[in-house]
Picture 1 (cartoon, rainbow, N blue to C red):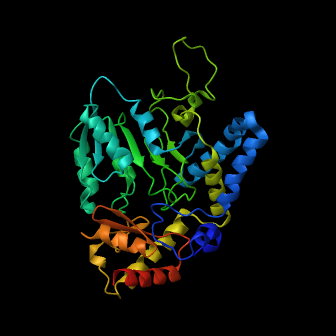
Picture 2: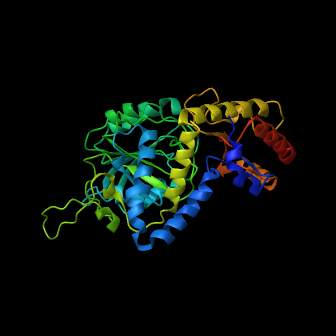
Picture 3: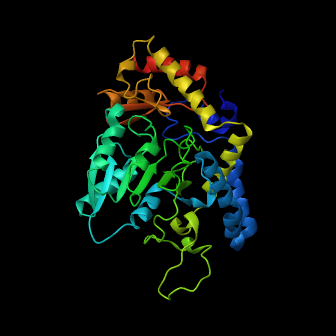
Length: 388
């Protein structure tokens, strides 16, 4: 099911490159080229009235695409931002300020949260409890045990752990066990567009963050949040775009009005170009009937083939080094090898134009719909040359 022909511009930019880092920087399909140009043309055509088109057409289209892929009943719960950190700060700004916030999270969160949480911890803004993610088999049980130990203001965890590829199963089980007044934030960046996601049963309880840089294939700047009604109705961290669509009503002169739905989490002026790319990709995927389920099946098969072919060679990477075993069905779109020489292996592969990425002692290989069986064979052969 390779769709390489739709990624011609990226692939032809460096034909010798073997890109096994789709989980880190996913190639953009060719439809994004014209979409990027269309954003420029719309700016020229509409000039001062450009934002009317953005808010009446581009954003609603993007909201519908996100909602459809997450099983959400109301697309207007979606708000966009240039990055997930910006959204995180707005969510945190909704919580009490008169004491340290009690935060439950894991030791496997990406830097956009982990760094900020550590800094807040330094000055007493956060009181953080971190659940160790591994072993994965007992993670949910241990998280729920920790959750029952205190009344947490915020629970933040990834849908797919960035440093292993493990998919946290049954989010509903976790969410439904938490008190109703707890803010629950799910980092879905390694899930959205990669694995089937259905939030319909918990859409009234969770904030869900993701974006376009990875499996949504649309590059930087197209991040979003699903904001459940009733949680964080008036973020303190707020930009003037959050006033768009605010209801005309009698308010105290000192009261700041907010847009309904997810619009309350909007910031200020941003580059809308990424949303043009995002919509173009989503429309192309729909035309090709490339659902997350179909994409996931393709990538799972490539992962299995990669491990099978790896086992035929005398390379320093072996199946037993996988953090998430190939037999584990709860795995995302990259394989993670635990190896003390991971950084050196990564550097040697990069010199051979085989692109992977490394996180400490963990080397990650990610595959996509622009890969096929031939790419796996070509990649293994190149790896043998580089590491042999």
